[in-house]
Image (cartoon, rainbow over all chains, first blue to last red; front, side):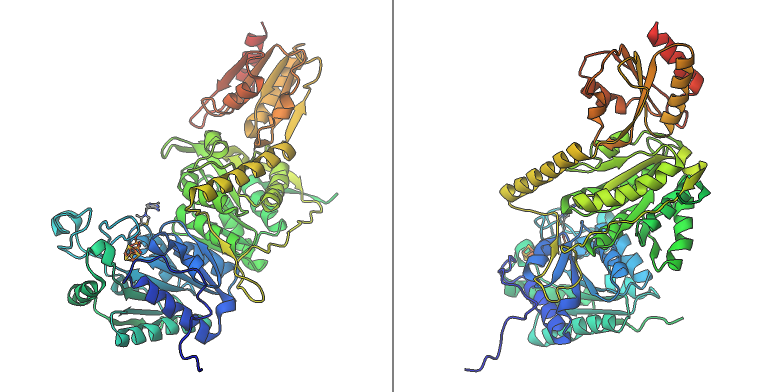
Length: 248
Length: 349
Ligand SMILES: Cc1ncc(C[n+]2csc(CCOP(=O)(O)OP(=O)(O)O)c2C)c(N)n1
Ligand code: SF4
């Protein structure tokens, strides 16, 4: 019998602990497939965030550490500066990257760190049970915006891909999603490219992935995908925001 | 014996770190330790090292965490307000058992305080400034020569026990110019098979400080405590000045303060007072063994550049056997030789 589909070598044996229908799992797989196909598994060092993907180092099958909440880009900087020959990436949620860790990601991008960041934007804090994230949409209900996010009180959501692409140090910034096979294919190509650039010695590279959180959004997985499509994509348009850093 | 060279305290920290094999430094500017990053910004590129100015002390300590994960000797430095910001990172380093050296060239607080020298971060360093049950090997130098020796020792001890170490100096030492002998030092940089280097030819390595299962988390805590007990047993260091069977009076002081206290003790001895001095070099582990026998001692005076911190550890060790008095000044002011001598005279009466 011919095997036509198997687990990437870069995925470990441990079963994922994500909720049913959560797109963190798909994104993990795309990262693992990209790393396998580029043949860099034995050179990769990953940095896990604080958030639902805090145990990413158990799910991936290569060297990894976990960072304090929001500090993954600084940790990755330390690793990459110590071992420039390795391929270093961070995997971060939107609370981790765009709230508590805003300074770290902005400055890693500004310094043109030769790292790759996989940024999972699900418009909410998943791990802590569904509070407002910096990416929560205006009007969106969460545990801490029970009447919906109001501009007068909580201001506006942060558009990370747009913001970081204004920095000269940013090399490659693309926003993708994983809500259909076609979207998944595009996301995979983007993630792979974000690693390929690092192999070529280029950075900073970030892929923002619009992701679902059916549990905290209080929706079925199918409903969550529809909600993402109807609400998140209009506010967070998909596409390439930056390709090629300024070279002097 | 090598040749003696004149060096400023802050620069000696940098020179010693490089001689100890440290090629990675991450920090954020703050007075009164600014000569150190300036020195390393010049030096690191010349020795193939990395000097990076971070966007904050929080970032700097996390860069240090990353470099330590990657298995290199790494250092950060700051002064009091900046070291407060590093506390979260220090707790993670202790939990993840990463060897690094953190320098604090203390200034006076609380809050923004003043840039003048102080010893007010003693509690923060030795009692655990961050969250969780952890200890930091804490070294206190009192001369520029000792800065060189203790920076090297700090790296060695951090590696030996896989734990962060704190180098606790003060602004006075940072600015002090003294001749030093760089000597012949061979750093014993151990293999770090646990480090993250890419999993080529081996199973994957993981560095973390999370154990979500309480039984495992307790086991990790017990493991850390066993390590700390080992450090306490092996690594207590202090200087003994005339503390013998005949001493009737003991002064306890560390760092810059110990230099002043020593002069006061010498003067007291000239006046016929049987005074002595213990200068803790390791603040944690606190040199309890130095106090094992109090002999003919009548009184102890602890002198600090703060409102009374190390005095608590001295009282714990002495455990009520004899009176332990305190004299300190704060806010960048420090007890003078005359004032300290005055206290000794007053207490011996
Ligand atoms: C310093 C600190 N503050 C707060 C927390 C609590 N906390 C854990 S995860 C999290 C938010 C995670 O949300 P996000 O980054 O969006 O990731 P997700 O769980 O949605 O994947 C928070 C606030 C923490 N662990 N550390
Ligand atoms: S809480 Fe949300 S983000 Fe976290 S695993 Fe569940 S669905 Fe995914």
